[in-house]
Image 1 (cartoon, rainbow, N blue to C red):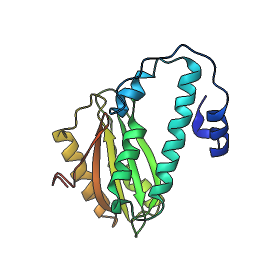
Image 2 (cartoon, rainbow, N blue to C red; image 1 turned 90 degrees about the vertical axis):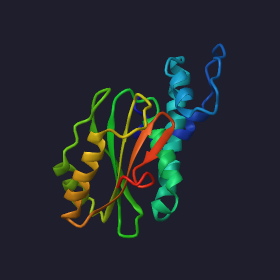
Image 3 (cartoon, one colour; image 1 turned 135 degrees about the horizontal axis):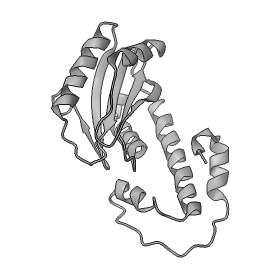
Image 4 (cartoon, rainbow, N blue to C red; image 1 turned 90 degrees about the horizontal axis):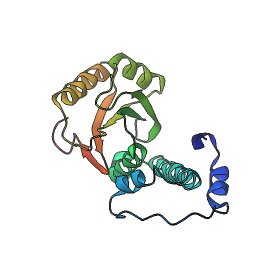
Length: 193
């Protein structure tokens, strides 16, 4: 069942519903969020469902915090949201977070989905969607399912291409994040933007 279509009240109700008795599972180290999430991929269906409900509630709570003010005033919440969003994905995704003139989140969107090692990103679609959301700025993000954080030369070229394309319509690229496991690399922090 796709839990993203449930209301928050329905999610809480599902989470609090009486659990089905199962044999306890060994718990991985709590310090590695991605490993913890992946350890439960093969969990019993009822437990896996409860975990997906809890994950959706956490994503919604983090997203609500990003709506409270300028997102780059607290880049940690953006990084945490990205890490949680990409946890356990076995394919690459390309995300765009659209921001208004005060850098408050308008919408976060998974724009492209790829394979294990690559995602095709079309600058025209990024520009079109930025204009459709009336965005003044964007944050770009994609994951590396391998867990590798180092940006490839293709990642750097794509960032510069998108930055140039969006600049033509007066939309600023504030950062590009790469998510690898539970770690997030910021192009801006690395001086790559």
